[in-house]
Amino acid sequence: MLAIFHKAFAHPPEELNSPASQNGTKKPKLPEETLNDFLSHHPQKTFSMNFGQAAVLAYAPQDNPSSPQQKLFCGFDGIYCLFSGSLNNLCTLNRQYGLTKGTNEAMFVIEAYKTLRDRGPYPADQVVKDLDGSFAFVIYDSTAGSVFAALGSDGGVKLYWGMAADGSVVISDDLEVIKESCVKSFAPFPTGFMFHSEGGLMSFEHPMNKVRAMPRTDSEGFLCGANFKVDVYTRINSLPRRGSEANWTEWQSHS
Image 1 (cartoon, rainbow, N blue to C red):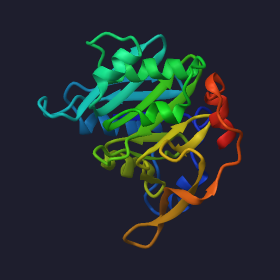
Image 2: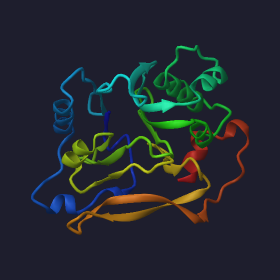
Image 3: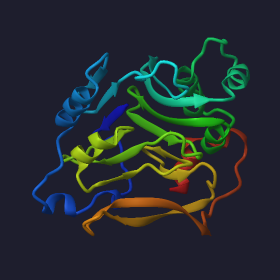
């Protein structure tokens, strides 16, 4: 999967951007160059969508059809989802949300997102925490201009993010594409975390704790983005959550 979002629509932590990316002989790439790299890495059955200057989404199906780690893409009502992995409790979640048995993981994630966006009764961290399995997903809400991404806590699926030459955010499960695009300004997306374009980065396992950036260095000793960890000693000051008040607005207040 590959998702690229213009800097006006997604604001990742500033620590993800490394000055070393601009100082070396190899420079970060522009979004269209990154998309071309992804398409060349996955020449068979690759699908991409361009949303003007706002976003680019690209999807390549699983090489091994029998693998439990699915790669899915779907769109509904202007909301698009890239999903990698699988949910062990998908049937239970579908019943909980009143969805049909044939609803796959990507379709379910879109429905869960719509519930959150439209002021559903659950906080975002609890909805993601209820997902049991190895998963990574990226959602683009083209109507609201919002981005929502998350990575499961078990480490079964890998996801990376970084900064392109024009400041766009690049998210992908293809490490080589990320390295070529972002040079030194990239890092693994943290497990057990979620990112929203307005609310920022937070742990869905420890939503009341602040997030700390830990500098990364490569084999040459250069700064290379940052790893993000839960600060177990620092909690976020906020009022207790109450019913439908626990929505995107509350998440934003945590950031």
